[in-house]
Length: 61
Image (tube, rainbow, N blue to C red; front, side, top):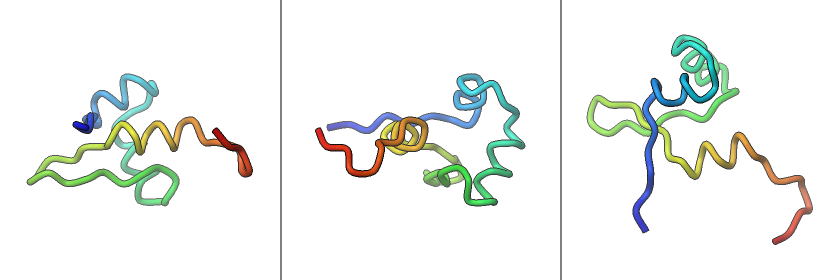
């Protein structure tokens, strides 16, 4: 299965925040760190989904 990746610009548009906010939150450990692909920073869709929509502890599928 092929993974989908997002740029910081796409995340900023989705969350309506500035790129500085994203990187500040990453540095503070409050937002997932990007994956580096060469010099490019990208976030995996699955990682963002888990972060933005956390499952309650003890929840099962």
